[in-house]
Picture 1 (spheres, rainbow, N blue to C red):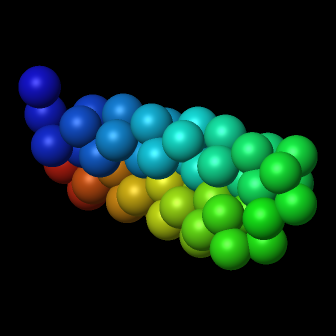
Picture 2: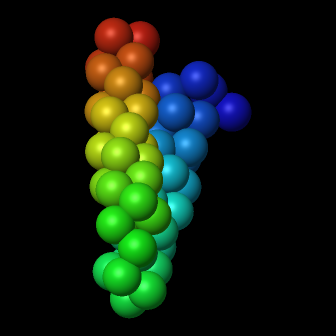
Length: 59
Protein backbone atom coordinates (compact mmCIF):
# COMPACT_ATOMS: atom_id res chain seq x y z
CA UNK A 1 0.00 0.00 0.00
CA UNK A 2 1.33 3.46 -0.89
CA UNK A 3 2.23 5.81 1.95
CA UNK A 4 -0.37 8.34 0.79
CA UNK A 5 -3.10 5.70 0.91
CA UNK A 6 -1.98 4.60 4.38
CA UNK A 7 -2.10 8.18 5.64
CA UNK A 8 -5.59 8.69 4.24
CA UNK A 9 -6.81 5.41 5.77
CA UNK A 10 -5.25 6.15 9.16
CA UNK A 11 -6.73 9.64 9.01
CA UNK A 12 -10.23 8.27 8.42
CA UNK A 13 -9.76 5.80 11.28
CA UNK A 14 -8.70 8.51 13.71
CA UNK A 15 -11.48 10.79 12.51
CA UNK A 16 -14.07 8.10 13.19
CA UNK A 17 -12.52 7.15 16.52
CA UNK A 18 -12.49 10.82 17.54
CA UNK A 19 -16.12 11.22 16.58
CA UNK A 20 -17.06 8.22 18.74
CA UNK A 21 -15.08 9.58 21.71
CA UNK A 22 -16.66 12.99 21.25
CA UNK A 23 -20.19 11.54 21.28
CA UNK A 24 -19.38 9.30 24.24
CA UNK A 25 -18.11 12.33 26.14
CA UNK A 26 -21.30 14.23 25.35
CA UNK A 27 -23.54 11.35 26.40
CA UNK A 28 -21.69 10.68 29.65
CA UNK A 29 -21.22 14.40 30.39
CA UNK A 30 -17.44 13.93 30.39
CA UNK A 31 -15.83 17.09 28.98
CA UNK A 32 -12.34 15.53 29.05
CA UNK A 33 -13.37 12.64 26.81
CA UNK A 34 -15.29 15.00 24.54
CA UNK A 35 -12.23 17.24 24.16
CA UNK A 36 -9.99 14.23 23.52
CA UNK A 37 -12.37 13.14 20.78
CA UNK A 38 -12.36 16.58 19.21
CA UNK A 39 -8.56 16.64 19.14
CA UNK A 40 -8.32 13.13 17.67
CA UNK A 41 -10.93 13.97 15.04
CA UNK A 42 -8.98 17.08 14.00
CA UNK A 43 -5.72 15.10 13.89
CA UNK A 44 -7.40 12.51 11.67
CA UNK A 45 -8.56 15.20 9.26
CA UNK A 46 -5.04 16.61 9.13
CA UNK A 47 -3.55 13.19 8.44
CA UNK A 48 -6.06 12.64 5.64
CA UNK A 49 -5.05 15.95 4.08
CA UNK A 50 -1.39 14.96 4.30
CA UNK A 51 -2.23 11.77 2.42
CA UNK A 52 -3.95 13.77 -0.32
CA UNK A 53 -0.98 16.13 -0.63
CA UNK A 54 1.46 13.19 -0.84
CA UNK A 55 -0.64 11.65 -3.60
CA UNK A 56 -0.70 14.93 -5.54
CA UNK A 57 3.07 15.35 -5.20
CA UNK A 58 3.73 11.78 -6.42
CA UNK A 59 1.87 12.38 -9.67
